[in-house]
Length: 129
Image (tube, rainbow, N blue to C red; front, side, top):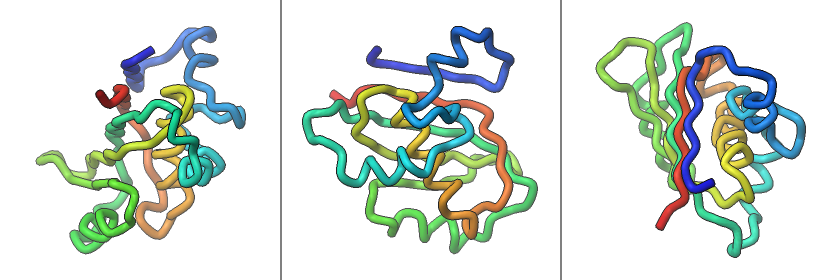
């Protein structure tokens, strides 16, 4: 699959399985193991461009939004014009879109100092050309 989209709407069981990473976590919940695996991913794996929209219970300081860019993994955290809605984007090498997305969301899970509570509302992943 070269493109994958997931929204916050309820999912039938077969679709939920499709969005499960190799570690048994749903991509929208994030997986720290997938995030860590992406650091040493096989260069032969597809490169995914990922966008994750999420909401947060509290606003994030502007300095946090800028600090994510310095993380060194081609990640960006932006705030569209809607309050408490954020967009995390990045690239990851992974065998499947679920694994790539779980890894990007795993960045948030593994870095709770950035955002302590969040809800993923929409995800898109496309294989980079």
